[in-house]
Amino acid sequence: MNESARYGATDYARRDPNDRHPEVDPRPPFEVDRARIVHSSAFRRLQGKTQIFGVGEGDFFRTRLTHSMEVAQIGKGLALFLNRLPELLDAPVSTELVEAACLAHDLGHPPFGHNGEAALQVAMQRHGGFEGNAQNLRILTRLEAKRAGLGLDLTRATCEAVLKYLEPYSQRKALRGNSPDALLQVEKCYYDDDTEIVSWIRQGARHHFRSLEAEIMEWADDIAYSVHDLEDGLHADLIRMDHFGHEGTLERIAAYARKKGAHDVTAEAVQQLMMDLLSGLRAPLATQVKERRKALTSRLIHRFITHTGLKAREQAPGYGWTLHIPSEIWRETRILMGVEFVLLIRNPRVTTLEHKGRLVIQRLFDAFAQPDSGDLFPEDVREGWELVRHEEHARLRVVCDYIAGMTDAHALRLYQRLFEPGAGHTGAYL
Image (cartoon, rainbow, N blue to C red; front, side):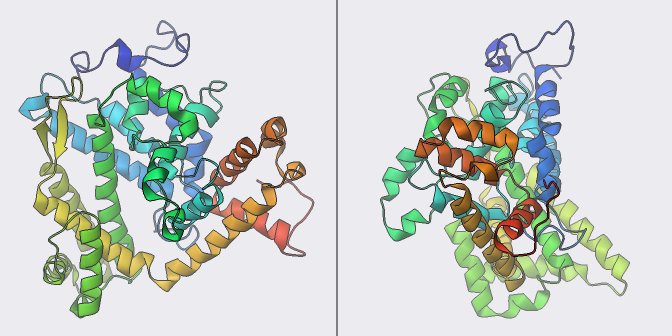
């Protein structure tokens, strides 16, 4: 693929100009970025973090790791499809760049899914906030140990491709005020402490347009979420045909879809789509049901990819194309997300685990947030904590980084050691 028409030295730049030596490492820059992400400790830990069903609920269900790999595959498919459109023939999107962004898009998510994220947001609301995507940027550009203080030192283009939100926490917070509901809201932002890094990534851009690659990454995530979580719900028998004969259920799903931007969705539209999708899954043999379920997911992904287009945007040099998603396709993904929210995320099998996870995160944070809690940290974290133990804002950010980086199992084991008599032992733990 000829990338020179779309990418140049500015896109390939790293914060450390002496980072790579092309005469020693002949790989293209975005291929290097993808490799650094895959080999990072944050990426490995995704195998122990909840997607919908808790880790350990069953080998079939997706974790954050398998979800990220599927997002990367869909993102690559989107890039390949878009590169065949006349608009991009002379300036194709790099599939390696899109894959790297997709693989990295969930690194900042804490244990226990969105409830873990909400618990950390409440704990950090007066100290810079917490948000999974903002934490993602912090991991990639600061915390990972590839380059001291520079994280993985990825190229500017890859950093921009994972930058979903273009406003700092303080600005988002000011818009919402200090009402009780606002305090519980997870802001979509980057951290104020990372303003300088974002300025480097954005090169002083004054508009609020994301890169085309960032849009592809987010759309790939939406497709994976709406389709693969449907598959998990069908496998768990939590999404069934009989659910779509209940008016109350249909209206709750429609309301969620409208909240997510599909403003014309009705209960009847939900029923029609789901009946169309699920009616073909019936079969006399279990193996046939599995085959038809897989065929359904493949058909939906293909439909969503091949109905994606491009729209010109002339007022921002370098950001000339944005994704165009037909309203029908947008509506279908939002209905599927509504189905998953109402029938999966609000199911007691999931909510009880989320409630437990939120309590675990809250109590761990309270324990580690104290100025005399240094002996609780592992040695590599304690070193950084000691440098800022008397500065509350910086100290709590260290605590937040530590807890956000845990897997579900790590957080539970640590909770048991700290709060459940007889649960600990003197051996080392991870």
